[in-house]
Length: 133
View 1 (cartoon, helix red, strand yellow):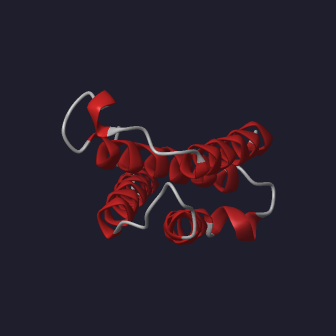
View 2 (tube, rainbow, N blue to C red):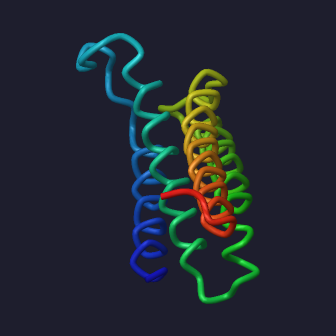
């Protein structure tokens, strides 16, 4: 079950890289103001989700237990690395606002996954005590 998510995470990370190194699209073609910030948020939220799913379904229990931390670390580092790479490209620029948007997407996925895990753990405890649904 982990392989499809791992492959999807790898392909999505490659797509982010390709999109990040291609020449910048002029603002005249943007659909709305700050469209690029929304795209950064979604790009890295999806990447973190795919990484989390790949590791949570790992057959290695140690990796599965650390899936959330791995998704957080990889998402934050990859978003930062993309911005650093863009700083060296002639048609791109490093943007702290883009970095913040990417990190916010990573943070949202991690918080939602953590909350979902806490809810699931609470329900399991309730069943163990004879309560719950």
